[in-house]
Length: 193
Image 1 (cartoon, rainbow, N blue to C red):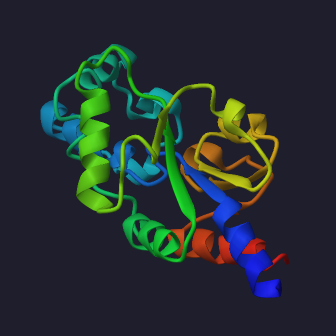
Image 2 (spheres, helix red, strand yellow; image 1 turned 120 degrees about the vertical axis):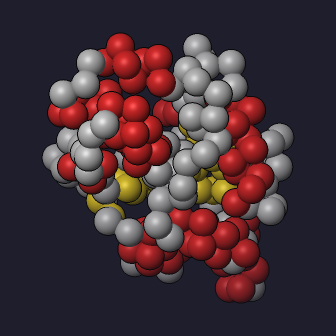
């Protein structure tokens, strides 16, 4: 009976995972393009601002850059994200990617789907993806949000883990540097600690 309850709890437990800068290294990709096009050598890890304003490059440049074909498809994964998300899926967790697309980029949604298909063989667009800015509307018990945005984390009523970036240093809840640490924290939650 105890195993049945634990298995039921696992089946009911869903992980909602943001994409950009949570499992997709979007900042690095954007900064790499900027460095190449502007002849700069800015370290993406030094970014501390939305819209990359600390680079000294005007916001309009980035607004145009994120509307280009390939911007969302050609990003590297965040280190450890693919390994640990696949591990969580293989352990029975239901995974739903929860992301806000750039609606003014006609390629964004298709590219995000293709990126997910490349990295997660189990990914099914109808079961494992929600496109919305209203992430808080998906909260229910046994749902956990993993995101890098303080605004989304603060609006989520349930359990949440912040994927650490230089932009969210002030977040007061669970904030983890690596996907290995995120994985360990999820396993602690699962164990009821």
